[in-house]
Image (tube, rainbow, N blue to C red; front, side, top):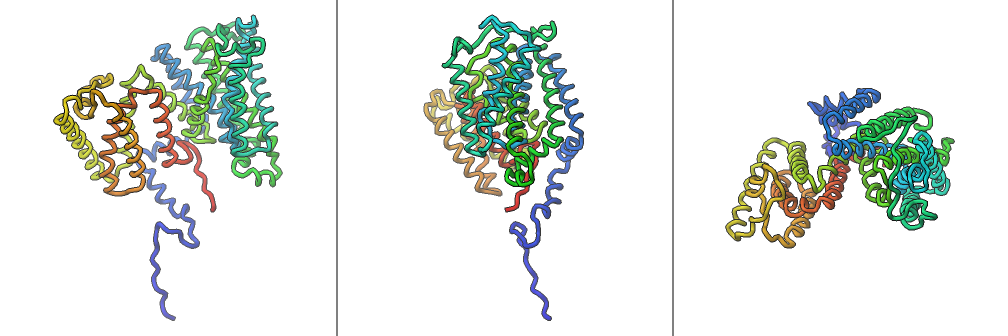
Length: 482
């Protein structure tokens, strides 16, 4: 019998009888060795209670070295986003339900506390009564929403819940029966939280109070996820039809998910309302919903610690991009660019070539622009700190840029799209002008409009993450058979 001709295997092509995901396991293991692999391994092998204890111990030290204002912005609101993210994670991450009206329950909890503990109607109930009522009211309304949409999935469920969220804002802003919600002005002079005679009056006290609430919620969800209900939620998320065929009560699980998520959101609102000393319809608009979804997606849907990390990244980045801190925003922007280059550009000769080319290209363009026109590089740097000199001699900042930064922004997007289609040295060659154009757009456009820049950077961050890790930072990758 003649020998069979040798076969040539194409590693990038599917092979019959071979599971490519299993076959590539050695490459994936090799890819996470080194310092990064050690860190990931240590994190994955640390039991969740120890992770929680480490985070709480670190968070408890923040009031020791942060001012009251910074503690409120960086500490308190990070915990607020964590709490809201944990509640949304129950509905979206565990049960797989697309709830776009979630922020309404946050507002319901806040308004319930404000109505029962403020001067608006002369009701001044203590917090040990008002907070449980806010949780119950939010959970009951979550149950009501779940009952009305228990047979809906996907886009249809999203439309119904989005309508509910907008209906709440409209009601609080315009309906205002008998002055119930205070209308567009909201409710002010809300009573401080008073628990069994102990009244919270300082930012530090509110910070520790919500930190305690976070510990309770996190521990409860950690136990719940490992229970029969949690495992049933996972089955519902993966395949509702298969879960129903296995006699899992799908509709009942949906209602429980809505109730738990709404209750956590109501608890958060009941803590935030007295901390802010007032509530208004604008505190619960769509931008808050987008931020909470960004927290869950960034951290990884279905991951409790992922929500914690996602909230820290989102809120710290958000605060660094405030108009009052352009220097910090600049450090954040350029730091991300440098870290991205160090992480993604390999081998080292490509990285060195990219750095040298980018530096030479920038100074060359600046020299040409200076020789062309006196006003081409005479623009002022927006509070660059000690980086002012370096930026002014490297980035072209015209005195009267006109629409040039807008055109540069459009060109930057086009070049980024082109970069996704090329590889090798072609990518390195295009990456240098792209980096310089990014610096030009940042200094002439984005840093001048921090409110818009926040949304752009958040969107870019999520798009990049979804390409690198579709499951989020700590989410679990799914292997689908198609």
